[in-house]
Length: 274
Image (cartoon, rainbow, N blue to C red; front, top):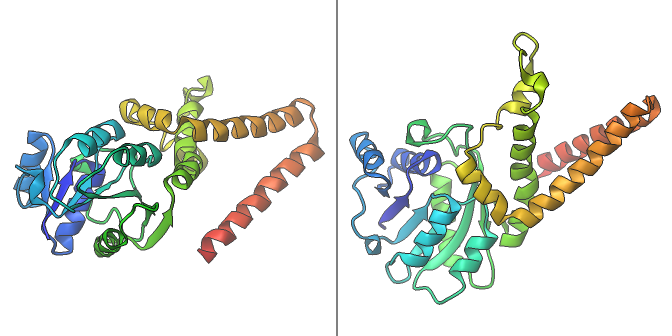
């Protein structure tokens, strides 16, 4: 089985390194300088010269580049082609807009860092992480099974299966909204001169503020409806806190905080069950 990883940044590079750790060879495709580094470090076996040579192609590119690749590049007949983008509906719609000679599977590794690039990739990035695999009536079960086995070998410990629409709705809340909130939080004038006044809460709130606007703006726009609903819900909730603070309503504030605490405890129990 010949494997190609397209895009050797943080996620693609980590995939290649995890495959190497598992004793599985893979070729790569990226900018020439990245390819040379990956080759020199022995992370990939060779640089791709023909995408039709591969049985499995993993596309770890930003969404627009991934969609162009999935739409325009030639693949081996019946090849398995998976993408690792953080939005699934737009890609699935594109792929299934016309007949393809490959078996497409939408995937989303729930792992990452606040930094990017091959230099920050790690063979251990996916250890114990969750992989989301999206399915519909046209998804090939054998392709999913093969990919799942491959993902297990590179460290993934949990798998969730859902539709592309369900993925985009959930990720709008668990990932994309969180990045927007962090990015907005650091814009406060109070953020200046904070040295010596911070603890873990500040670090938690600001860790993911430094998003790459060229990548994340496209992710947000491709999932704008779902993110918009989550953002509107958050703004509405924050208005309740602002209202009780302005009214010096201690009981009202206690009730809001209690609601949040109980909801957090409920979510913690849910995660333990899963």
